[in-house]
Image 1 (cartoon, rainbow, N blue to C red):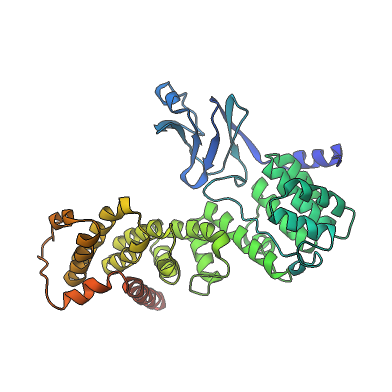
Image 2 (spheres, rainbow, N blue to C red; image 1 turned 120 degrees about the vertical axis):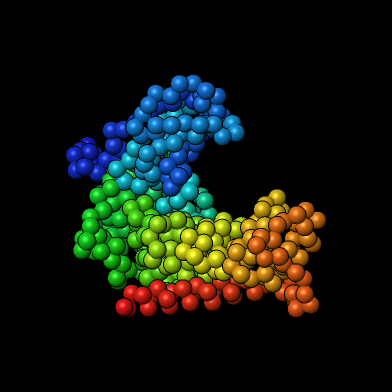
Length: 422
């Protein structure tokens, strides 16, 4: 069994590294509490009835409302943590980033032991390597035993880092901070520990010191990727504009597939959404370019949501042709229950962008897939007429829409850079 020293705990407490600030709310409710950080909300399951009661005005979460059976706390910060003891839900404001947010969890990839200096391939040839393999397989108790054994080996820094991760999984941030202190500051595991401390404490520096914190030079490639993902997540909380700009840089002007693989596509999508929703024109153009170079062609359940955000951003910039093409490209992934509204929006966008032929193609597709109700859609100022040449368009919809969106995004970026050069 590991015994933590009082000296180390005192160091954590008095060094300003505590994750919790003084703002706290307690709600008498027995349901599970979930944090949706980017929405600045806490959801309490089964507590909708409390929405009818008088809510004491609180600066941390000043408003509440019911959604189905759940109580939603509308908060003034994205830096939130919620826990439940079975009778009371406690919501804390954090100095750093939330470690268990449902919408933007901290990236914690699993590593092949041979790729990060922990011995041979799985099932592992060292206690540390075996622990990493066990973690990947979800064998948490076995992994913890192996990590404690690895503390007595040359891989002690790695073991301390992972024991800190397990402490966070158990919702013990102070214990996690103790382990991170034990990891040290040097070597690649110590550098990862420094980033974790920045996330928990909120002490992430600025300028040159921040650059040094996230400088992954010399680290093994899988660890470099984790560093890049954690930097993106931090920037998403601090500045959506800076985050989408960094994502653009990581991909050298295109969607960074290697960084935003299937395991952490959700984080990159949140960065993209932040850029699309920004009021900054260049950030929107950057986000639209990124969307067109990757997610617009990547079939997934998230594509309709991303496409809808991209379409709204494009309309705000006066690029209704891009909006129509980007939204139309996601048609194949739209749920049946949402298809009518989706196609009607695409149809309207094509009409408003002066493309009645493509609007007719959408209408033909809608008649085949959502039924005769599509005949009631009003064509707007210029009436759409079927013609022989439109039959080909109807047959190909939405096959070429992603290609159209990509072409239009490239043109938008070219115009944006031309403006900057003047």
